[in-house]
Amino acid sequence: GAGMGMTAPVSITVFPAEDGSLQQKVKVSLRIPSSFQDNPPCPSDESIKIEERQGMTIYSTQFGGYAKEVDYVNYASKLKSALGSEAAYHKDFYLCNGYDPPMKPYGRRNEVWFVKE
View (tube, rainbow, N blue to C red):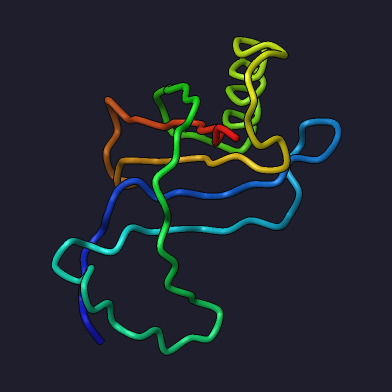
């Protein structure tokens, strides 16, 4: 029953298949605003969980526009190529992040994150 407003980024954890396409399993994460951090409201839906995300080091790439699944897959592929075989990161998942409300037509920010091992 508490209104928290929109937070950024909206982070979607995706799980790539062998061919680079995304599996249907995803996890959507929203940041709880600072004013609710110490005592977050208890979800009334059992499918919603409150998790504490530990600090992490990421490899990231940024792009604009209204991001679609194909855009995230393409930029993940470009990031993978740019990192080469020497970088150690989790290969079983990556994060797709959007920072803007749907009604923002220009100057949109999207990112792909690989989490360093």
